[in-house]
Image 1 (cartoon, rainbow over the protein chains, first blue to last red):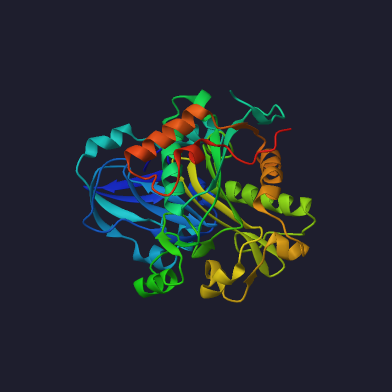
Image 2 (image 1 turned 30 degrees about the vertical axis):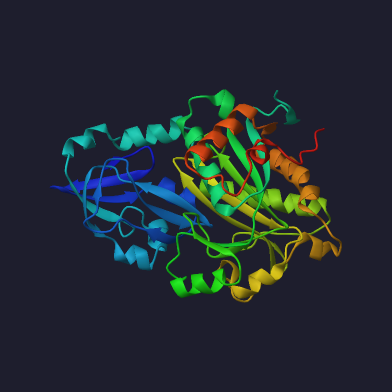
Length: 123
Length: 264
């Protein structure tokens, strides 16, 4: 799994990456009541804002960790946004994207890097 | 000339701009401009840790990102009442803004404060509760975001966060006409009501009475000093609005004034 500084994670199998938000993010947001996810077939560039998660009347933007084409969004999460809080790395995945530039993964943080980032930025 | 509005020597400072009466859309463009400026993080001297915009709107209904529940016919119905209608990118459901309601948009860099959205919202709620208390009104939080006096909402909250920069904010009812709320289910909560500070105190209060106490509470809760937003930045905003043809409802002179701040 790789991570962004904006607290998204991506897990790549072959050319398809599954994207979600980290446990830290779901805690910082509070109970998620609505997930605005990118539509399948939409083209994204790395770090494009591609949706939002709403909690406590706050809409927080989502960013795509990589460039590519969205192939699926998690309909279960649209129906039950609380899955993001309950299971941010498993059932709470947000969307799947076909990577157009796999080399972009190199710029992302690994687990240790992300943990460091949380520590260094006083989270 | 920079005048210190509230100076408690906190290690954080925010700018304050009390614009006065402004159409919703114009205020939104000002928010976007200042949010962009804040996010560039280039000139901390200009932007400090954020800017608080204080406004009063002409009648307008707004929705948040959960906007599908409000159809086009619903939008038309509300417009025929004489209000504007906007679908926005904030959290929260439908609400109303109008004359006599204190609307505050903190454009903050949450990197300078606590980075959690949950914490930001909580501090906003506490700020408003403190303001109400200073006027003798017992207000509280509840499971529904916002500030309540028993079963009546006195202040609505709805914000947006992008890379830790916040937009939108709060709307505290001072002496606004509550009948506008009867045409909607405010914030999607059907069996609760709305109230104003004037109604709770059974005496007329105006926005001007509340602005400074609000800033004091905000300063205390967010542990930040307040400074008047510089003339230079306000001029930049005005020039930006002019360039984009967005100043139809407001004069340049009004935008450059920084109103109603009692200096201590």
